[in-house]
Length: 328
Length: 287
Image (cartoon, rainbow over the protein chains, first blue to last red):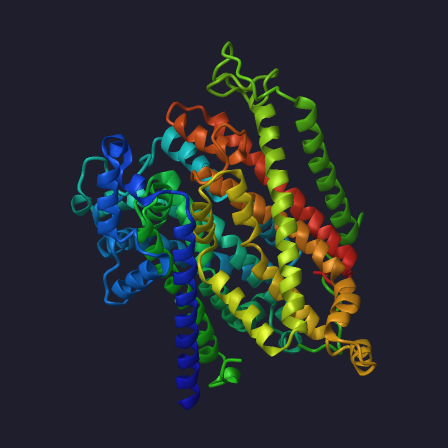
């Protein structure tokens, strides 16, 4: 019990440190940017605003203060729960984050789940029968698709299914002109399917290759040889011994790959104009919406860190040999 | 598990070339393809960059394999120019990344405990954000453009390699010749430069080549979403984001070929990296 508490405490401490580092570096990077926040805010109205009004805006936003004071103020309001105001979406950052996360969650969650399942099954089969056609096809698929640019693959999907065949809509998370709350589940699914497919097809590769390597190792182990001597077939060994032992590293890889999954979703959401966290990140970066960009960076750090922490803890829960061992 | 009983790996091909020969052949082919892309880009000169309004949006044909775009550019020439841009960005970014990774790994292993802890924390922090988001942040800070992309890609690709190199050196620290060198009164700095660094060369070379694909893909992605190279440059990311505008009109060739060529380029680098790894460490890659 003490071990677990110590483990979680060190994790939390590390999280706090990483978050602090991201906050400092993120803020410094945003300050460094040549994008002028007032110009970004004004947009086309820039020409109609005189220097006096600019000075007023700068004063109101605290832009005339030294950078470290600005950082202090930002951090202070951050800690009190105020994430700031997003100019891009004309809404408080917290609201934007919540709404976007709600749209992204089905996409990310389902992609994660299916990529994991399919990748694991493919990896187990390929690793249990190395050199056979299923192994060759799996490896070819993984090597090619692990290198394919996500956004290009998404464009191909659009070309084939939306433009060529006309089966799926061309963009967004619901029909154009329909409010998000009025979209029926069926319509939502129809809009979700292509970005989801893009993420799954590309996400399978890593987990399959990893599981395959592990399976090959297991199939050559002493206990697999022993089971073979007892008359178990290759398939039986693969399912009884292989899949179980390979599950652990697979789960770890899966949880640790949340960051990459999000990276893929940024590109997929951009291609399909899917209004999730990914497209919000791009919009915030392009429009110079600093509060939103920084809040997203912190949120995603938390997201990725949670994934890694879960992977680490699961490892210890599932593997009895590691019970209660304190992190190095 | 058991290292005493070395069960031979399953023989994949009983006839013809063995695995090793195949890998090296693939590596050689990859190198040839990359060299010819770089050559072709030089030979093409302004072809594919200057507009030709007589042939706009022509579909692929025998004379124009990849078709033409909205300004009448030949897409094959444009794609080759784009790949060439990718190659340069990749080369600069991968070299800088390998340099950073080497310095950090040597620093972590030769400058004491706190240095090691610091480097570990840096790795943690850099890997704490999704990579693409970090790239967006840095490009935003630098205001976008070619230089911004190169810097962003260069300063974010070191963590994984640093980890590998650090683990390698930590293992090396217990080798007899290092211990002897220590006993003879050599400083860690001396050992780092004269023993660790020469030992790491193969790793560094493989790391450099295998960083290329990541760098190239990230450059293309950044450019595609609008942070990267100027829209006037024939980069693959620009070509693909242009193709999005003609997608609904059914101009499929604008999107298909540049991406396919980018994929081929990446696979070439993977092949070379695998070949080099095989040469550097023959015990690996047996499966």
